[in-house]
Amino acid sequence: MMSRSSMFRTLIVKILFLVVAIALMTAAGLQLYNHRHYKMPIVPGPGVTKAAKLSDYSEGLKGTMADTNVFFLQGKEEGGKILIIANTHANEPAAILSALIFLENAIIDKGTLIIIPQFNNSASRNTRPGDGYPLYFEISTDWGSKKFRMGNRDASPLDQWPDPDAYVHYPERQLLSFIDARNTNRTWPGRPNGQLMERVTYGAMQIMREENVDIAVDIHGAETMFPVTNCIVAPDKSIRIATLTSLNVKAREGFDNHVEPSPSGFRGLSHREIGDYSDTMPFLLEAPLPFLDQPTGPKTVDLLLNGKDPFLLNLSKKGKLFVPYDDTGWPMNKRVGQHCSVILELIRQFSRKFPDRAIKIRNVPRYADVVKNGVGHYFHDPHKADKKDIYFN
Image (tube, rainbow, N blue to C red; front, side, top):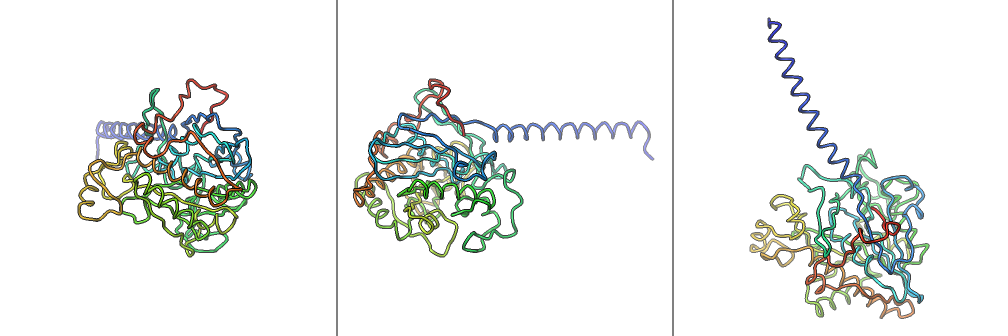
């Protein structure tokens, strides 16, 4: 039988352990809370003529973490319309960086550019601590640095829960993985009364229908070990423009790019459902993202930004990667530069094919400029902007 003093010492030890556990949980919880509620400033450029919310097109998003900003850049002359969708997957950050370059710099002389820089806003506030994801990353600029949340592929379970045993795609009824219910590249074309991520994709579909959007570009990043990378994914209705775009950027700008056909039997994808359920021509862009590869070192900010990893370099020498890879890695400037050039070339090829719906855009850098000057060179200082003009995501 334990003595009273032994019981007291045991109780003290247990209390100490409990206090330490509570302190650790509080510190970790506070970090995740701050990440979820961090406000990233967006400085609209001189070409922005209107700002809206996705809930204006999908009422079921109002008051939720899934609602997000939508920006319009309308030219003085009527023409075609293009929608740029970024951060469908919030762990592929070259997408939002590319979209912000257009948002902060583009001048539209003819037609309209619509930009959703943080499409899956809930996923941008989610993370993968089990995989060691950083919570934030920073981009160097001419005026300091710009801080971004590092998000996840899927929406936060705090916003959409519970996950189903199997996700049944609407309206095709195809059975998908349960986690795809929170993946906004599996929930197209969406529905107004569906789960939260279905309401997100429905909102984008309504923009395309109501605004008569001609082309939609969904920006992504993919593993170097995945064959569908460094490419444009397009269905039959978009394949000709995609092919001409790919050939031109390879010939004129010197970076690799190819075309992948959109599979008709795999449902829920933007490059499939947008084309099938609207008049808009969809394109999905993939740039190599070594951070997402499994056989890498720690998932650090350095790996995210410079794409350098000794394990991938070794695999490249053995011919196991689907993109060229050397000791220069795949830096963010290169990835973002490719996206900018591909989007501009898609616009050019569309305008040549449909001159009555032409889109004329200027003041957006191409691949060589972004590689030379860096992504941050094209971002505006929010501290010098009028507070009433700044938006947050």
